[in-house]
Image 1 (cartoon, rainbow, N blue to C red):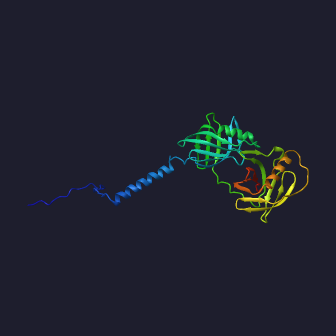
Image 2: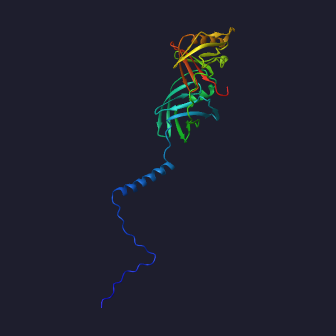
Image 3: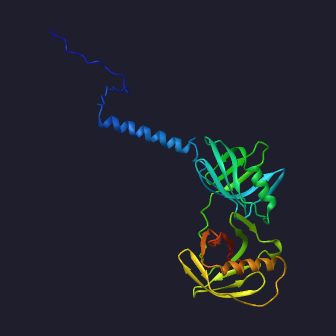
Length: 283
């Protein structure tokens, strides 16, 4: 008599796992893609390096010798791949920069202007610190450069100031240009020479002592002043010297204008000219 066949009895709760074969093809590609995407996300949320320092940075302050010096509004550094240029606050500068990854840089100062500026203590300290090997502390919108003695330059990224309009802006003359030489307006005359161009084709202002008015023709980047009508006060000292220089400049013919943020430069064909700052909304 044939005994009935018996099936093996599995303990209750145990499961049988079958070998599943995934063919090389779209399914495998999908699995690998999902895995790589997960790794990328981990790097973004983890220790992936922050972007390089290349870009525009506004200087906020310096710490040196146990003191904090707050930066003037115009102080900034624009980093390219191997160069930097900017403003110490009044004087412009250029420098060579060698980046050591994202952790350090070596700065070799280059050309700079040499005007006598109102905040020379800050400018001198900034020029001294922005040189040699500096370590980098980079945040999402902040950059701190640290010198070997612990002194720091604190910067923040911010949108570049839009260019002030040439017309209907109050411009205050802050320096005079003669060829390659740029000289700040003497302290005794600072803020006294100013002018504006109106939409009706006229110009008016103060040359340093006397008030003036004139026709002004704007053609692209060229400004041409007509004959000046002025008051008749006798102007002596630095204010009188500035006035005579501006009177000659405005009468010299077409002037080439250039605006960079809140700074206007007017230059004549002989290389003489001026720079002026746009008044802020509070002025």
